Length: 549
Image (cartoon, rainbow, N blue to C red; front, side):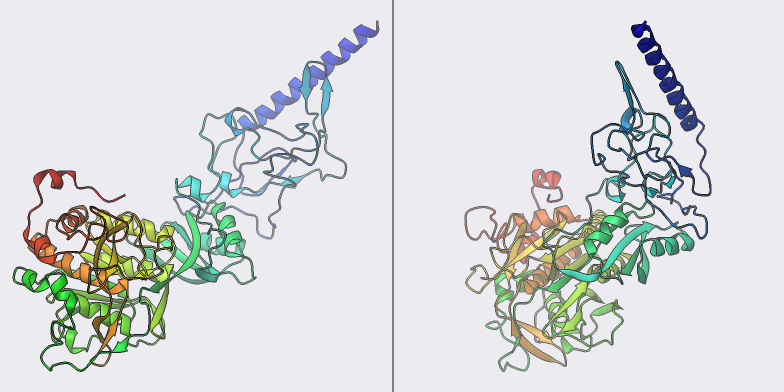
């Protein structure tokens, strides 16, 4: 008799469990999004409409209703035994973040079940579940792929959260990327949702998206805010507003007195090292546009007369010509006392770096503006004589620019041979340039690494400075400028050259330095402008040319 009673109770409980499970599944099958928040049982995930990742659809939220979180939502386990108290979903969802309490539910031999309404003591009977990352996805079991956990995985991109020890960033700012179709109301809601203050925004042609620069007003860390933004369905990407510095080693020194007509070959030793005079008998860079993203360029310097085709001031500070930008421009296209690498090139002068003594700093946002403007104004070459951390947004912009046929040149950096790679030089589509001295030795402060492609003189270089003056300075910045000019010569001679073929030609015609073959110090060796301009690549090498990875 006792066995019969036990079996009857077991059958009864099994029947209740099956009926409840059927009711639950029916509820999900009949699921229909609502324009207001729904109260749900803890442990039952509600998939609320969210900001559409690629349209302007906005989060539907009842005015005045505050967002609430479900206790332990999204955690892998509750604070006790894994009793399966919350709804754990079915199929590939594996629970989907429902409340998994400390074992509340029923058990009979051969049957595991969660009783309807079986909440832990003191737990509220209703809660609003608001997980915008799961918006626009059907309920579990509907045969759809697993929804992405955050913006990074949704776009198949790495997270933009900065490395733990990274300090090269604006400490209270973030940069986010959203679709161009997002509505102003959705942007405002996003801003309020994450307690941020808008600084500026711009639509970028290279990415086809809109980027916002926002301030964090309440002392939260950049990493914490980026993590939160990446889990918001309205956000495509989020990251810090990184800081970059110009690749110059020290305060420039005034140049020695020189003849009126020329600074002389003894002072411009790089001209002979790179065989520029011979190359200029073949090409001078005419009708080739080179963009210089740097500090302010003194367009009135005699070396640059008639050279600046257009200019763009990214900054909101008063313009002042700066030594670094002026030096880079004249090394590329100087044509009075200096012999620039491409004296007939047309320059796009982009001021993205804010002066700070001899050096200057720029942010992710200002560099992105400069890159986008350069591409829109048909630059064939972009010189980037600056260095900083790996930057996801700049990486994407450079990738698109390279695919558009723009040759990208960057200074290796001046942090020395023990430094990790600096960016953008270490980007796969960028030609990284290290610096040499008058004896073809490596500049002591030059960065090195597998990403180094080519070398050029960068020690004790005579450069132009504002107000018609000249200085002597050192750094990989100047080496990069010389290579940018040589590339302009190559493109004038062969306009069909792609970035990959330019790199191949530079390396195939370089003078080997250091260990035999390509190495981490000089790349393929010291550039030879004359050979790069005049020699045709062997057919096998041309057909095999691919972007450096």
